[in-house]
Length: 239
Image 1 (cartoon, one colour):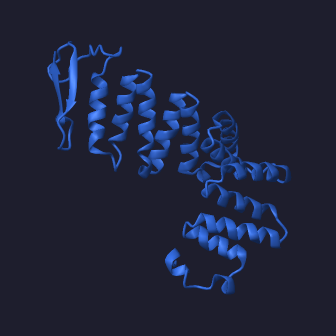
Image 2: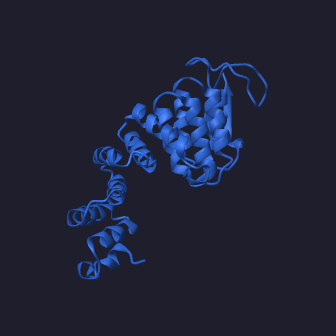
Image 3: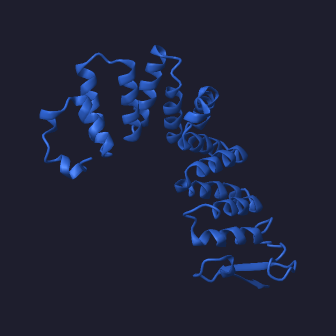
């Protein structure tokens, strides 16, 4: 398919309808132009529910989440059984930080969708909504499920680990990184985070934990020596 640069040399106005142009720009990820083309298309034709639903997708990818919310709520009055609307609206509400509302729509979506039609992004957004609502355990289940389906999203686990760490739940943070290093695209520093959080204190500034190197039970300070590709980079000093 032609890139956006090559599209500049093609007279789209002469060759395609506004609907076609919207779809073409969507495919090359020029979502701003996709929105412009499809909005014009909707003024020239009867705005069927399927067209407006497609418009909502374009708004979402162009990060116009407020417009998604308004449009989906309008479509829902016309087609209340369309479960895809719960997906799009749930995603957009998460992006706007309206996580309680997002959970309502996403949980409704999951109760109605066929298992074979669930996307990695469905688990991702449900996990994000749970995480931002303070429910780390359900966030973990959904985010790990996301990465199991699409390992390119492995960095989603970083925010989960940080949430545990911020609550001084360092063992749980370490377990998240233990999961993360099992997937492709894990980073060399993931090993460092895994082991360092195992050594971090239960109370700030008081790192009394069992040392994995010498089995002593003494206060420790930790530093990263850099380089390499295994947990052997982690060095510690007993105070």
